[in-house]
Amino acid sequence: MKKNSSTSLIKILILVISVNIFCSSFSTNYSNQVEDADIHILLIGSSYFSYNNLPSLVRKLTQAEEKKVFIDYRIRNGTYLDFHASDQTTEAKIKQSPWDYVILQGCGSNAGYPDTHHLIFPPYVRHPLRSSLETLKQKILNNNDSTKIVYCLPWAFEDGTTWIQGQNDSYEDMQKKIYDNVTSLVNELDIMTAPVGWAWYKVLQDSSKLHYLHRSDWNHPSLRGSYLMACVIYSTLYLDSLGDANYYAGLPKDEALYFQKVASQTVLDDPEVWNLINED
Image (cartoon, rainbow, N blue to C red):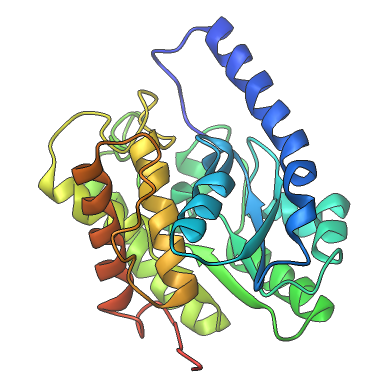
């Protein structure tokens, strides 16, 4: 989805192989948890979900909070939601279960620049967001009309669009465009939002460390970024704060608890903005 200026080809190949192994094995490892789960969740996305094993991060957070969930996924690296909207394997995965939640991964480039994405970002291919969400929503609800659809509001590139000749949006500029476009779109389409990118924005206002939530490619999530995403997803699903969950994913305890706090506040301070309704 973006240039990688610092990683060698060999490292990229190793990473792709590792991610593909993860993607092929995850469902089998946890399929025996289906009957015991209180809610069933399907994640649909690409490398933003597979980096740092996001499904496992979400599952372990819910376990730490004594929740019983079953999580499955359809992940295809290097794709956008338009791929999944027309993909037969994704459709088959949707039809596999009457999911309680289907969580759709966002991408900052087409969320922030829906009309000019194909002109600004290489390889200059359209990846329409609205029509993709509309198609996926229809397929999901045709399978089970009570499934709740959650779109993950994406984060901006760490260097915005400044890495592209002729473009000068900073990280903050790009993130605010993503926020404006997504909050309008999800309310029009009546789907829920997990405000991942907005929680990132709040954290990065407090930290000036390079590659703190982003990896060194300025794009994909670091472990911190993925952990924060998992925390936001938890609070979005349960409309509740993480109660100092004792799962830290290998991060320092104080840092993990800080991410839990920011995630919970981001979701719960503005639930109407994210089109979240507490039906209880």
